[in-house]
Image 1 (cartoon, rainbow, N blue to C red):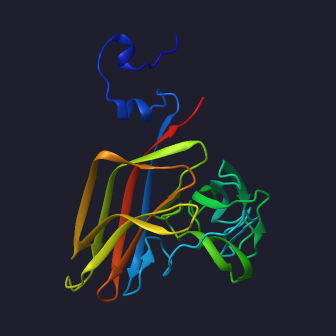
Image 2: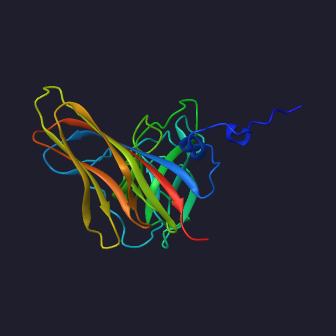
Image 3: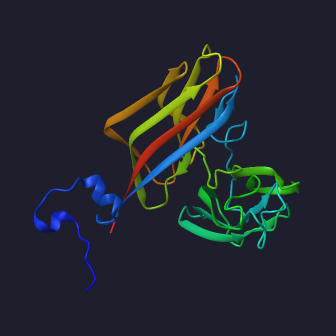
Length: 259
């Protein structure tokens, strides 16, 4: 006889609301944790992701390409064989596509995406990992790198580490907690981190800001910060000197609006 696993709340006992959401027991609610990492933040403001720039977004939904810097990331290779890309379409509705890799040769996705929220390696060969950096972008691809990258799965991470998320249509996101950390070999560099929101007008608004010198800032919104549909939340950083490693994290509760 199979065992039925059930929430203890059905027995009249207490179970935290957060755990119930994580167990998909609260209709219209789900949690999203967004983690970002940038290994080299210098004296120009950049997004907390593995590239030395601010994240850019296309003005319209595009059929992007997927490519790797390694020829081993291919359908029968030792590296990544397929990846899953999760994003939003032209109407900010959630879409997902599985892409079969072809090494440094660009593979054009069939789904047009306006935003990418997450991507990860779904299957791999004997290496059990991507063998190179996997790019999602547009334009001419040179040695696996597109002219315009919109996201990246860095070598050996096997999923995107991009501190950015766009709220899907029909949802409101509530930011309950965030974290920003930085480290530098000399320990003498000041790094400023910002949590930003960007709406349909594309203007970056500051929701939180912190300054650190080799440390961690953990901020909790006692009254969660409401982020409307189609709005992007992202983390950025800038150093007073070069060569800072920076990470960010923020936790979202997505609540479905309407009937």
